[in-house]
Amino acid sequence: MPASPLFRLRTYTLAVALVAVTAGVAWGTRGSRAFPVPGVPAPSFTATTLTGDTVTLEDYRGQVVLVNIWATWCAPCREEMPSMQRLYEDFTSRDEPFTILAVSVDAPPGQRDAGGNLGGDLKAFADELGLPVPILHDAAGAIRRICEPTGVPESFVVDREGIIRSRIAGATEWDAPQRKAAIAALLPERAASDSVHLLNSHPASDEVLPVSPQSIPIRLSEVPMEGTTSIRVVDERGHVIPTRPIVQVEGEPAVFETELNEPLPPAPYTVVWRATGQDGRSVRALFGFVIAPSP
Image 1 (cartoon, one colour):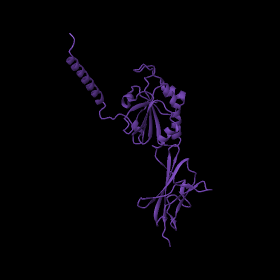
Image 2 (image 1 turned 30 degrees about the horizontal axis):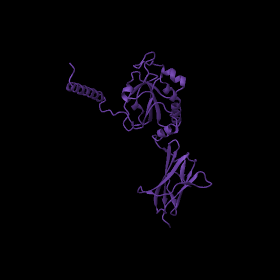
Image 3 (image 1 turned 135 degrees about the vertical axis):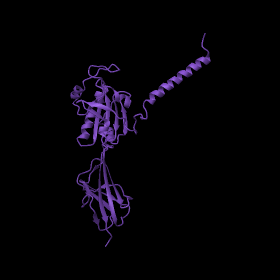
Image 4 (image 1 turned 180 degrees about the vertical axis):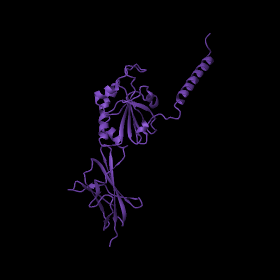
């Protein structure tokens, strides 16, 4: 005898309820851990180096970290590795607090993972490509459960405080200008007081100017990086003095100046000079000077 519409409705409702409960249990197993997206703390994970040492993401706190999830059997992973290598060498050659953790989810060599993929020899892979990038291994695939990637390769850029700043699914050109600039923006600003100073003064010195200047000249020991340069003048109470755009002095490639909207009254001031390169990296210098009262 065919089931009545009411019976079928009750059966369908029960099935939906069971699906909802199952989904709730599955999501509940994540506890309070947030889904790893930009703006949330990066989930902790553990992996093994090629020499057998165990490391965690927390070991690299204070550095900008590019976490790359990959596998030897993944063709796009292999394609993006050279650009990742160039990115790594560029930043580490300048002693920037940056590293890459390339975490392989290969099964142990000779074994197959749940998807039937054969585990590769990580050391042979790294030697073949000449990779200086730190290679880690997570044969158990725990990082997949923790970071929940959509596949491989997938990458997370984590800032110095352990917050995810970007998540990139699929292969990319890591040394492309926009990628490098995004990472450089997370690095600490470099002091440049040894190469930038007030004209005829010393960095951070109290230069006494006899009259209220209408412009402030800046001499650079080195021509600034290509990009943008700015100057701010701040009084002793922290108020910013309005200035006009910085300009280069004609015939003096290492001298710049900014014009003030009005003469400065006698007081101590601070000049903040900042240059930002095309790669997003910036340097800054602070110098003080004093406007002395007219005699």
